Length: 103
Image 1 (cartoon, rainbow, N blue to C red):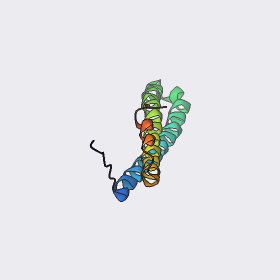
Image 2 (cartoon, rainbow, N blue to C red; image 1 turned 60 degrees about the vertical axis):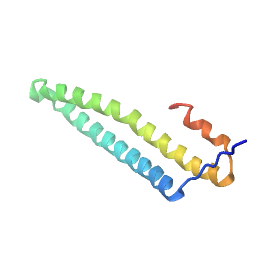
Image 3 (cartoon, rainbow, N blue to C red; image 1 turned 180 degrees about the horizontal axis):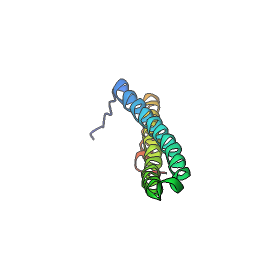
């Protein structure tokens, strides 16, 4: 009977986890900045004849796509961090959360 050996470079996986966390934080900051710009554009919509309102709506669509992407990056970061912990403990069942999909 063959046995399976699972090896992990903790530094590489940890760096990946930190990178996903950094991207998630950056995306959230972009979403906050877009929110401020959207509010400014909506406030000035009356003076611009509606063009700033159209731009505000366009930016809002972008912001609405950024928030789920930030959540996904945050989840990937957590999954990788848990994988390191599980691997160090010798837990082979921890791999299940990689197949669960996005929560």
